[in-house]
Amino acid sequence: MFELKTKFNDLSQNKELLNISLFSIATCISLLGTSAYNFAISLYVLKITESGLSFASTLVLGVLSIIIVTPFTGVLADKLNKKRISITIGILNSFLLIFLYLLVNSSYNLTLLMIYISTFLLNFFNTIYSICIEAAKPNLVHDNKLISINSIDTIINSSSSILGPMIGGIMFAILDIKYFILINGASFIISALFEMFMDFELNYTEKGAKKEKLNFYSDVKEGVIYLKKQSNIYNIMIILATLNFFIGFSINVPMPYIINNVLQLSSNVFGIIQSTFSVGMILGAIMIKKIIKKYSKTQIIKSSNILLSSCMIGIGFSVVLFTKFYCETFLLIYFVVIMILAGLAISFIDIPIFYFIQQTIPDEFRGRVLSIGLSIAKIFLPIALIISGILINYIPSYLLSITGGALLCIFALLYIKNK
Image 1 (cartoon, one colour):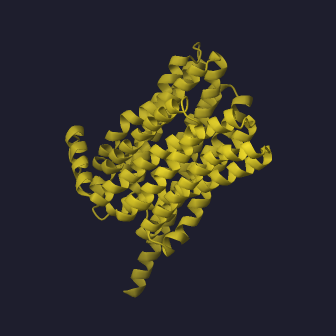
Image 2 (cartoon, rainbow, N blue to C red):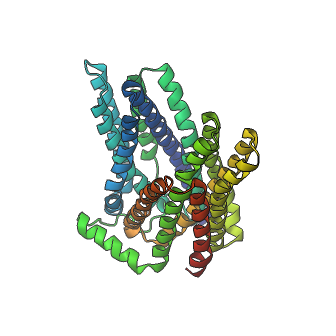
Image 3 (cartoon, one colour):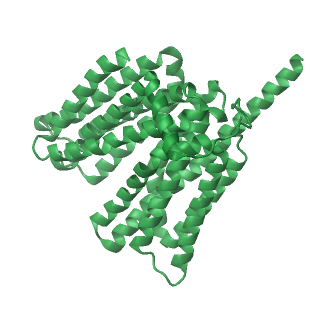
């Protein structure tokens, strides 16, 4: 009996290890390909139009598709088979890009309209995929490996944001854009093939459970009602929304303005500073497993918010340093340290929060609650960007970073401690 139990545990562990390996490879191929493609296609738009507005429009279409589809993606993840959804999305992405390649390879030229439509659809499909995979993680591994798979996901996401533009830039320089489209289409097929061998029900106790018919309105409403009843989850979504707001208000708008317009550092320096944020997130993802064993999730989230608020204040304080003395190397090191710490703080907030959500919400509601909560949280980012963008024309940019950092610190000390 004991021998049988040992063999069963070994088999389960082997399946879990296989799931983690296949998930890592599939996610890496998909995210790296998407990041490289988005960067290369944006460069292509800039090249053929020489218009910053057209370049920005490509980025806006990606964000717009995410905002439109996110509230409804959770319904698909909860009601349909997650494995089939993930594989289908990979195939749809592949077919879309291969079809685009065939159009361009024939007598047609790659027009702005083709790029806008394909960019919108790719981001539309990838939003469905990301929510589905996020909801499926607790079924792919056992509870003791959930932090590990979340950390791996963060590392791959952050690495893709660094390597994707580098690969996209190199490929854009050496390849015709149509061949790059074909290669990216093939990458989605490869990713889908790896997902075919993943066990999406390894840690799912209700195997074979029948799914109800889809009714988007009532299903989304049901998810909202569940979210309102779960005060702990509701409070977490408030933390995410607040975090998104202050990142947009105190970092995304003021920091580039301070670096480029106030301190007038070179574009190369600005590029290095931006990339170190992802480095911080990778370090945080590596460290979080040990930290979460020593401290409670509330302590980690509260302390990380305070650390992030200190980084925001530090961004504003750089202007004060500039008035005393100017040294580009010193300012580069100063901002690199700040951005690494900011990335570290974001990892320490995101991973425990998603770990808690994945553990707490039952499978039948997880997709909807994630999609609804993330939709609410994401809405606050563009609001913050607009407010900060308007205010920066009337008040000194460093005050936005310092004020936002101070308010986030107060929020962390009062709200997170009590909730």
